[in-house]
Image (cartoon, rainbow, N blue to C red):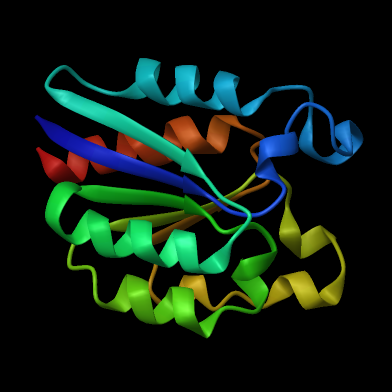
Amino acid sequence: MTQIHVLNGPNLNLLGKREPEIYGAATLEDVEALCRSACAEGIDIRLRQSNHEGQLIDWIHDARETAAGIVINPGAYTHTSIAILDALNAYAGPVVEVHISNVHKRESFRHVSYVSLRADGVIAGLGVEGYAAAVRYLVQRIR
C-alpha cells in the first residue's frame, strides 16, 4: 500500500491544550482523522509526532523507502534545523510544509523556514485544515 507520512515536531502533541487561541481546539488525533478522510483509497496515512529532532530525521530517512510523500509540520525546528533540511533533501518524493498558524503574522523569527527551501509547497494559517489540503495535494501528485 502507498503511504503518505505526516510528521509533526515539538509541542504538537499538546494540540488542543496549548495556546488554543493560536492553534485551536483540535487534537493530534483529530488531525490524523482529518488526514485519513482527505486521503484516497489505496493510500495510507502514517502520522507521527516527536519532540526530538533526531527522531524526526530518522523518520524522514525511513520515508525514503516507505513513503510516496511527506507532510511535515516541524514546529519550532522549522526555523532552526538545517539537519531536518538536509534529511528532506535526501528524500526524492514530494514534501509539503504545514503550519497551523499564519507564521508570517507572528514573531519575525518565525518568518524564516529552512524547510521551505526543500518543500514543494507551504500551507500556513489554515488551522488543522492545512493538513487535509496537503494530503489532497500529495494524493494528486502520487496518482
